[in-house]
Image (cartoon, rainbow, N blue to C red):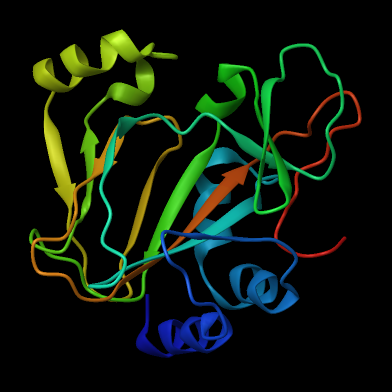
Length: 208
């Protein structure tokens, strides 16, 4: 992604000071950047169809003062505007004031996640780690994860500033603490072409 687009994104996000991560709710400027300025929606729609939209954004910033590790896991929740009793949507939580729920796994399998790197990340600065093909294995229980990682092929998703990684949302992934801590800002955006059932609505990134 071109340098001027990264600079625009940095300006939009400059008011946010994440520790582990900041879930971004209504932000019309960020929504406009994603939809009108960046190529992200076009990329997502080329992979998942014309109805694909950005449904969640999280800003991460690992640094010397916030240097955490995250074990191997699948992302299993979505952010919605309001909790409603809909069959198949279970294990409700509230994160940063927003309702989150585990949807049917088939919905997650149709989603995409993009990670936009505002800073470069090398092997010493906690790149995302992924297990190839693990997004095709369905919902994994905790007891399965270790054996899948051990048997699978893993990669570190190193990046330069402006690079974008795209992956299937339920891929098995992890992140180590940085061995040489410095800023590692990443904007993570989830995309989906699905309309939610039973009156549920995606929390989204900007007010409707």
